Each structure stands twice: as structure tokens, then as C-alpha cells.
Amino acid sequence: MILTNIGTVKDILSRHGFSFSKGLGQNFIINPDICPKIAENGNAQPGYGIIEIGTGIGVLTAELAKRADKVCAVEIDSRLLPILEETLADFDNIKIFNEDVMKCDLRRLIQEEFQGLRAAVCANLPYYITSPVIMLLLESRLPVDSITVMVQKEAAQRLCARVGSRESGAITVAVNYYGTVRQVFGVSRGSFMPAPNVDSAVIRIDPNPEPRLDEESEKFFFKVVKSGFSQRRKTAANALSSLAGIPKENVYVALEELGLPQSARLEQLDLEQLIEFSMKLKNSIT
Ligand code: SAM
Image (cartoon, rainbow, N blue to C red; front, side):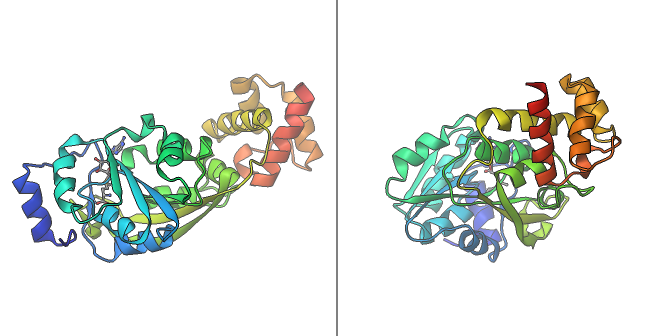
């Protein structure tokens, strides 16, 4: 069954009385070039178990299952289950979990389902939870080699921005702290059914094998980053004193040690500077 053929897709959906849920971010891929490319760029290959988030009617799921040893897909919408039974009937290496990915124990899933395999995540993410899903995957230090996901173009630009540039945000810092990120390819809005109002892009994050900081330092680092980026236009000293209760004097000293002016804003610091700055600050108040 060709799941990128519009006639085929419309036929399946109407036979099952399925209507798209905007709230669940249901824009299904109908451009035949996209899913093979996501799979090939996302470690879908022998020796791998792939976690997919959000199956839709299984167009990407099938391409992943053709290449990897096993696919475990988490899909929240139970209306899609009878459709998937039909569209993925030819595969015996796919397991669907009818769950909300935000509540799913993915670490346990990997342990139980991917024994002897390496793991990776591939998905065309529901856009309303792009950042929470990416943060969940990174913060939980999921043992995966790569996270290859389609996101809205604007989100891709933010995620792939240089830390310290105007385009970067707290999530840019987080992604670069946890691993390396790059844009793999762009995708036009016409590649989906229904077509969204914006273009998309596929990005790939390769998590670092080891944490850069110990748990306590990491917690402090993110407290600093979140305070600094939630009030981006304030100086580091003003943002950290008002939101994190850190005395301005300590901020000035840490900035000075890095050769930065008292008026510096956190969004201007690159990742290494941010890490060094927050460690100096932490040491000065503990
Ligand atoms: N992979 C399919 C494709 O590319 O055509 C569908 C992608 S569509 C953008 C996002 C999918 O994620 C939908 O099937 C939607 O029902 C599902 N979804 C939305 N929220 C979810 C959640 N919290 N947990 C799991 N799946 C979710």
C-alpha cells in the first residue's frame, strides 16, 4: 500500500470515518521523498530499534520498519489504531503503544523492547509539543544515538541557531548543552495533508555520551539559563537577582572573571562562557 498516494490516503481515512485533529497536530506526510530521507538520516538500519512519536497512518513507521530491526511507535490517538492495523499489516517488527508520549516511560521501553540493539528516535513531531518532547528526551538522558525530528521551520532555526546569537533561546542552549544539533533538510508545507501554514525542516540531535556537568551543577546551570532567557533584555545581573535571588555583586564578579562587562546580557554569551559563568557564580554563593 502506498501511503503517500493521496487517493489511497483519502480512501483509508474515509472508510474509517477519520477526521484530522488540529489539536493533536495531525499533518500527515504525503511527499514520497520525505520519509525515506528521515529514516536514512536517522539511524534506521540493521542493529537499531527506533522509537517513533506519532504514527499518523504509518507512512514514516513503514519506512523505518523496512530498514531497522524493530520500531516502537507511540501514538496518542486511538482512532488511528484500526487504520494502522490495515496499513502496517505487512510488518512484523512494529509495536504500537497507544499512549501520550509525555507520560510514556521511554527508558523502560528501550530496555524491554530493544535488547541487544542500539536505539534512536525518528518522528514527524506534533508541533504543539515540539519543545517539551525534545526537552523530555534530552533531560531524561535517553540512551539513544540520535533524535531525528521534523519540526516547524522557525523552531528548526531556533534549535540550530548559534548560542549567543539573537536567534537563540533557552532551548538552543539546552540542545547544545546536551548534544550537537544540525538541520538535515527543509520540507515545504505542500508535503503534508492537510497542508499547514508554515514550512518545516528535519533536524538531527546527537546527544553527548557523557553529561558535561554533575547533577547539582547542571541544575544550577539551567536555573541561570532559564532566568537569563525569560527576561532577555535585562542585564544578567538584573535578571539573576530578580528571578533567581542571586546578589548582583556575585554576578559582576563572575562576569569580570570572564572579561565581560557588568552590563552583559546572558543571551550574548556562548555555551562555554555560559557554563563557566554559571560555575563561577555557583562557587561564589555556596
Ligand atoms: N508520522 C505521521 C506522518 O508523518 O504522517 C504523523 C505525524 S503528525 C505531525 C503527529 C502525530 O502525533 C499524529 O498522529 C498525532 O495524533 C500524534 N500525537 C499528537 N500528540 C501526541 C502525543 N502527546 N503523544 C503521542 N502522539 C501524539
